[in-house]
Structure formats: structure tokens, C-alpha cells
Length: 262
Image (cartoon, rainbow, N blue to C red; front, side, top):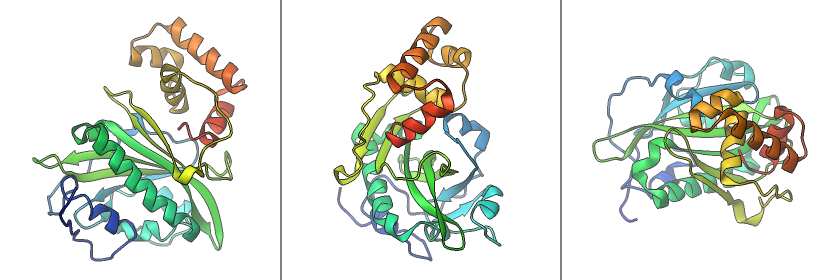
């Protein structure tokens, strides 16, 4: 991938240099777009705690459609309007990981096939400030919502969930997973630092069921979604609980985040 992509961002931020390396797949021209309907994408999002979301315009890194929870969660007086304001909330010690996680996600999607990007999401964790000198762990997800006529990314929705009540140590794991008609699952480790101790040896189908359970779907809803019988889904759920040595979904979610599975 060669060429120089220059964003229109008025305020430079740490991800600009990453995006500038991918001129074939990221848009750098202004395109007027309507605000995406969050309900069209919320089914592919995982939110185990207090969360907020916002929409990114990749041309100039402006953000819009910001959920009001951001003010309370981060103790802010004003709603951010630029991605740099979000990045400035991240713990300085986690920025190197965030930059590399962004690059890892883009390259994995490029490897899978950039034409599938609107049915692929990336996720990873990092610490963000929630008050004066108080940093807590957040789970980040990015879902691509709009491409231009040449297939380059124009817009995305990010969702941040506070998972401090579930984990305190960053698993340093980057996931690229499919939703909609895709069932991709790619788990990547940051400089081998993120390799979790726990290996639950889940099958690809079990990971799919685990993800849906984490998103709040019932066994019946999952059965309808993945075209399996209710009995088959409950059997998978039982096997997941057995392999992960847990008895309820909340415990499963905690262990899955620690192992970098969601």
C-alpha cells in the first residue's frame, strides 16, 4: 500500500499517521452524509456496562451523534466535536497500544477483503479518564457504516463501554469479528504481551454463541439468528459454561473479556 493520504483534520491526533498510510481504503474528501441510525447497528454491539457512542467522519475527524452519557462518564462539561478530544481522554501509557491496535485492525480487514468492512467490527480495551486523575478500563468497538462509490471508508460508529467492574488489567488483545452475514473471528495479540493465560479451547461456533450471549440475546433469539435449533444453542451454552467454569452469563462475560474473546 503506497501513496500519501492526507486527512482534512484541523486538529492532528495520534491516529492520523496510521490513517495516512492507507489511501486506497480511507476517504479524505468531504461527503455530506446523514447521521446513521444507531438502532440499525446496535445489535452488533456489546455493552456490558455504562456506554456511549459517536459517529466519526474520516475526512476531518469530526464526531457527531454523541450519546449524552459521555458527559457523565468522563465528567465533561461540553460534548466533544472532534476525535482528538476523545483520544485525549485515553491514558497516555495506553496510546501506543491504541495506535497499534488501529493498524492491526485495518490490516486484518484489508487481508479479509475491504469490501466486507461494513460487516466487520474491531474491538479492544484501554483506560480512559473518568474524573480527576481517575482512569478506568473501557471496551472499544468500531463499526463501519458508510463507504464511498470507490469502496473507501467514510464514516464509522464507535462505542465505548466502561468495564472497570469486570476487569482491571488490559488483555492487550485486538479482535476483528463479523456480524450480519459474516462470522469472522480473528484474535490478535499486541507484541505477545496480550496472550491470555486462559485457553478455553472454544470452537468457532461456541465463540459465535458466546458473543451473542454477551450482546444480550436469549437462546431462542440466537437460534433464530444463526439458524440453529433452540436445543442446539442451549447445548452450546452449557458447553461454554463448562469449559469456562462459570454458571451465569455475567461471569462468562468477565472471563471472556479477560481472555480477549470479546
